[in-house]
Amino acid sequence: MDTRENIMHVAKEMVQSHGYNALSFREIAKAVGVKSASVHYHFPTKGDLGAALSARYTEEAEGFLASLQVKPAHLQETVRAYVEAFRAALVNDNRMCLCGIMIAERDDLPDHVRLEVDRFTDVNVRWLEALLRNVYPQMRQKEAASRALAIFSAIEGAQLIARGRGDVAVFDTIVKAYADAGLLP
Amino acid sequence: MDTRENIMHVAKEMVQSHGYNALSFREIAKAVGVKSASVHYHFPTKGDLGAALSARYTEEAEGFLASLQVKPAHLQETVRAYVEAFRAALVNDNRMCLCGIMIAERDDLPDHVRLEVDRFTDVNVRWLEALLRNVYPQMRQKEAASRALAIFSAIEGAQLIARGRGDVAVFDTIVKAYADAGLLP
DNA sequence: GTTCAACTATCTACCGATAAATAGGTGTTG
DNA sequence: CAACACCTATTTATCGGTAGATAGTTGAAC
Image (cartoon, rainbow over all chains, first blue to last red; front, side, top):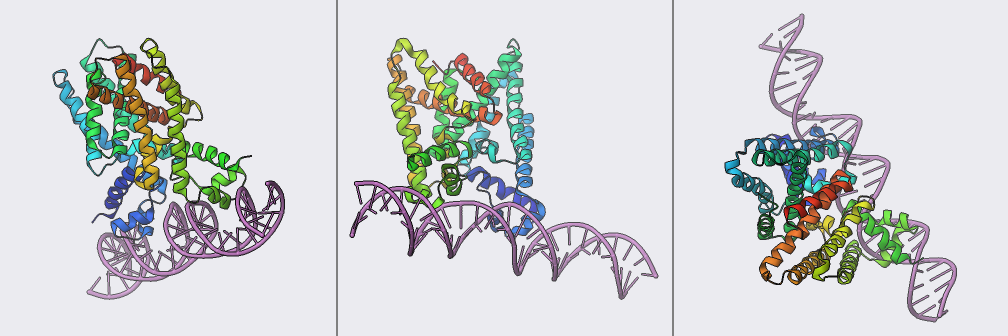
């Protein structure tokens, strides 16, 4: 019954499936069951909606990452839970990471949307970096940062390619190969 | 002076920068210096243009890959040349792999465009797989296929994330971390 | 004279956005 | 209690702009 929440919910799924450019106020309104002017009431411009979506997406990611155990003893479980979050998007109607798909459209994003999208990468890479340094205390800060960036990129790439195949098994195959090669802990 | 070639040239760059959805006949026409109806003369529908772009893109990739040395002795140079091709897109005005960005929009692509986009992944993965089996003859076929898929995904991911940062150095950092971790030969 | 390649002009559909009106709720005041 | 003011959420109706696409015309080449 909370229209604003419903708008954000359907808009998020639409972006994850079709991207920011393809997001339309009319389609959102139709899905929610209101008129497009009502969507504009809650989010005056498309940029406002996009920024709200990516901001919340990053906040939820922050909460999720904070909830994960980062004890060295549970390292593999932690990484598995992290990867599973990206896998879930594919399982859920072959969707992509909201910020991943928006990076592909970055040149068309309003400035404040792009800032929020960038923050998602920051949050993920910083968390991975902290995880690595927690588990491998001897690892230098620079190396941990590079490795964290590599892990994040690899997972985003796996999601992109698996989505192109429309097959979650492809994601699983790629992640296993990452682990076998030594990229993932 | 070849209008059709000019159309494909500017359209390719537009897709690499803004994606398929954002591609507009009017914008193409303006860039080429003709009217949009002329673009429709050469490519009756947007799907025809998209399919032609991705088909040629894949063909050029096939030619490029065939031209690379795959002798075990030059393995690292070969891989470096392969990665450099993806790097070049970023250097060239922060663009993305044409098929990578179109995968993100796959749900909105006409069927024949999607088929061509898929073929690009096939071509790359098959080439990487052959490279691996050539260099590591003892590697099983299944393992080589997984590894090839992982390498391709990782590079596409690196390109995506580096593009989000608008910084080629990020791409280089990620690729180096891939190599250090053992993902790249 | 036929073909090619471009043009002009226009169509319908959809985009984001806005103004103005409406209905319902809340609170204040006489 | 009733009247009024105000706020919120939504509607109707519409705007200018742009999308892809098409019909018909022109001019040049062969």
